[in-house]
Length: 248
Length: 314
Image (cartoon, rainbow over all chains, first blue to last red; front, side):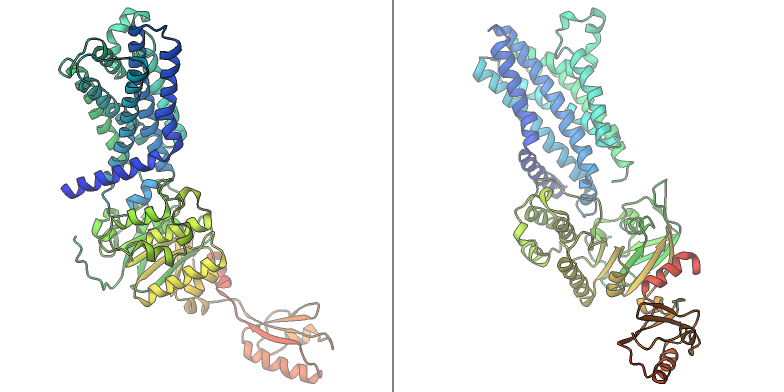
């Protein structure tokens, strides 16, 4: 067990290093959302501290969603289409460990990018948080894992990259529009605003807002973290079933 | 199953009634196959005949059914890590992460095996030293093909399965691969290859399996297959003057069918090449004719191949 765990950790580190060599991954995970932060917080926030905090929570949530779905969902589907998993499957290395390391490396990139975004907002635009950083870091971690799991689920059932692309957009766009991550909750019909929490982006954006504005701690966000964890478990469970039943 | 599998096995691949499942194309009809230790086993067939399907079925990449199936003593449908330790596969349509360099990939894959060849030696053997720091995605097809083989050889496998190993290779690289396969044979290691080139199969293969439409038409040594040739021997000579009557040629001992002439080149089909040649020399003497060249062409593997897949043995 310890040997397998050690191998997964080493493979994750290798895959992470390789992902950081990919200019596209670096741009979309880090560069693009930093530019969004600069534009929205620098020019469109009107210098209002409350607006900057809300915008930061929104942009970081959208970043976690989009990056996780694209990096994990489309990234895995593309790797499978190129025969990468097929090549690993032929070796004695445990196949589940290879896929797990690949998912972990991609999820870690998403988490790193989100942390960099929050730190950029903090140091460049004075976006601060009450209490410690543990609360929002934990939320970002669970958010990355949950959306990474949804990406894993997409890759499990998408027969090709172009289908994975459509599936990701089908998940991402409604999630952005209806969770409160891009449209303010106040603008939503009250009936929807009451149930929008079913979308996993809602507890993430609400939790981040709470952590930044009110200093909500991990305990305050426990149900949100649990709900994200539930999504992660369900998506990984169904995704694993999907991966097992298909040929490499 | 553990790492203490016996090295000497009667057969390294044993299949009875092996067939593909589902709607995968090309499908494999029930195939019986034995592959012996230390041989180069070449699978030939037309495009779409099922060569890749057969190879991939043997290494567990396809969903298959079989009455009996064993590769290195285990069922490839449940390929245990211990068996994977002993085989090497260079499949088609497989790759590694695009940003891995050649050297990194070989080193990484080496960590998966208990027995491994050093990366430096693999780079040397497969002539990859000059590209060792290049990302895999930037390799041209011929080098990518050599790299794929190097990955398959990373554990010095007891059985190598290679799908068209000389595809995209220049003659020099192809020769290098042939020498490598011959060296493996000398070391008692088995290689199972698919190829579209009959001359390659004839040159390399200890035994050749001919596949057509997912069916194994025949398996034999190159000599054994050639002995089954139905096509007649061709006695061919070049002569400018005097002209020889082709009807007289068709009446030579052993000759079958009409003799042909194109320019100065005459051709006589024969069931008994030596008898026809002796009779031809007497005929030429009678005409005081000295040919510029005289040769006897036996039917090649290509003739046998087309005979077999045309249904002669179906």
